[in-house]
Amino acid sequence: MAFTLSLGSKPPDFKLLSTDGKTCSLASFAGAKVLVVFFTCNHCPYVIGSDEVTRATAEKFAERGVSFVAINSNSKKTYIEDDYAHMVIRMAEQRFPWKYLYDESQEVALAYGALRTPHFFIFDQERRLVYSGRGVDNPRDTSKMTVNDLERVLDEVTSGRPVTVPLTNPIGCNVKWAGKDKHWMPADACDLV
Image (cartoon, rainbow, N blue to C red):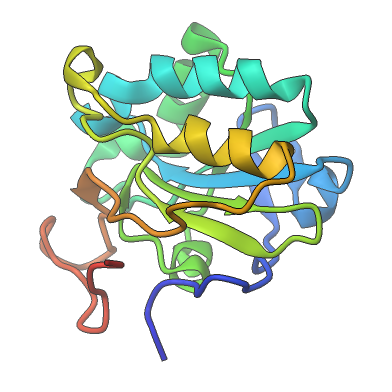
């Protein structure tokens, strides 16, 4: 079995604490026509470098019924700035247009097969996985970006068109797994394409 969720899969459920103090699950986003679940964190330069492009995409597609949910699964033992308290501060400062959830146990990252930060999973109205991979082709420096896969896929899905490129390799720092070296990846983790 592949480490990362396969195309056509349903999203694994979760019950995670949001930076607003509430607990969220998949049912919290039942009203979304399209759901974007992405794995992120507080410290990663690829996340920080692309957050504003992700924000612009989330705001652009909100009127088409697309909801975004961000999940931080990084171990606070690797980078203390990835802990819940720092998530709350970051959300207060940045006011992102998505829920920001804390996967302290890392069970959700394992269920989805999150590889890097950021790693995007897009689910259609039937909640089938139609895209997994990067948001853009140069997340660390979006001034050099030439491809915005996130925007392309959301435009295709919300327009009723097939997804032309459903898999790309996420670009970023690897998820920081508890008790492991900061560069460690699970043995069955591999490139998507």
